[in-house]
Image (cartoon, rainbow, N blue to C red; front, side, top):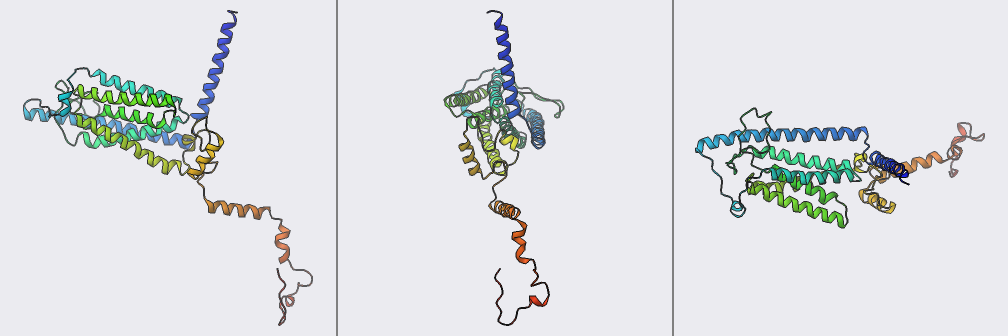
Length: 336
């Protein structure tokens, strides 16, 4: 009996690997068009994140000028600073980033349509980062944390998670809220999914309070992140629905298994009902009644025998001369 355990374990491992490989080929395999789309999306996200870091460095250097003008560091009055005590534990903000991002990554990996989640996540995060590029260095405010460090090197190459002047708005809170939006939209629609989504929003709120307690941001920075991140998420969702889903584009990302199928447990009736609601056919092309009618007429003409369609127009021996085609006065034409 003990000798059979390694054999059974090996067989079980082979079955698990085969199952995972089939799932990868089914849900993660992409065509060339979808690969190009994801590459462009990743480049746009990377550029937006890079230039957001550049503008944060610019804001840090401008914040140094404010301190030089004032002669000392000055913190703007903030209501929540009076209610939440000050703590010097900046690593907690980074830990909450990990607590939000790692479970979200596991959700993406286990999802039936993973590339759709990745696309929506990168597009929403990239859009919010583009908005932050326009705000972080436009209006410089005194830093709320006395022990922050100014960026004095090259703004294009320096990188720091906690620098002075990196205020409007909170990038850490942006990560919290975007990850929570992923759980809201793509978590399983059952009790476990609802519990995990509630936990995600609880971590999001706790992380936001930790950001304020560490004086990493003013309360207005955190609130702006809470406003902008859901707005960016639902803007991308609206654009995706009307310009990708409804038009049958990027099918390997949108419907990797079957057009209209969201989950493995969906029945054929559910998939068909979803295709009707989206106005899509089984192959993913948009439903066009005129095109379907013309195709039906064309197919009917192709199925009609040639003799039946042309015999009435072929001349016979009685009507082979030109004069026979002229009808006499009062003669009725032969009905076709």
